[in-house]
Amino acid sequence: MSENIRASLTVLFSEEEINIRITELAEQISNDYKEKKNLVLICVLKGGVFFTIDLSRKLNVECEIEFVELSSYGENFESAKEIIVNKDLICSIENKNIIIIEDIVDTGRTLNYLKNDLKINKKPLSVKTCVMLDKPSRRELDFEADYVGFTIEDKFIIGYGLDYKNKFRNIKYIGYMKKLINT
Image 1 (cartoon, rainbow, N blue to C red):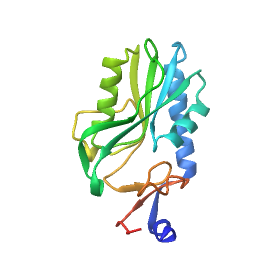
Image 2: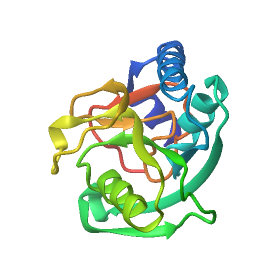
Image 3: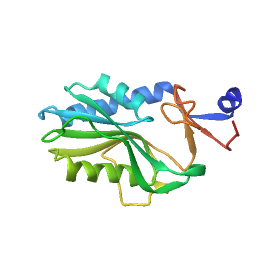
Image 4: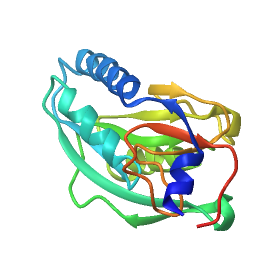
């Protein structure tokens, strides 16, 4: 079935396009944080890991990388009503500048929850968000990421960290499926 999934994907952003856009984002973030200290990138697992690593390698400012894992999807890819923290931060981010790194923002509920939780409970100096993909047509909250790789239409996206049934994250490009295939 794996070949069927890959064969059914239409390339939305090539590996080269992703690389170029990450370089641009890294330049923008490096410029914004060149005078600031204590930058921490908080990667939202699992989908954000590829983006976080590639972005961090291109930054021209010192940073730490930490990880959180949240769940917000129920069965059949429908949004759940509550956010579940599967893995919380294990370090203090008090008085640090934070950028939350996520693969995609659609409803906005997960990133909004995490951003507010960090501000209230962890006391950082600042909290910004950076997403590889923004899907504003699915937004349920008034939420805008501070840094956006690409804005997309409402499509089922796979690759570059985004999965289908926890598979295909390692595809080097971002593609979409016209229809779901059972695996």
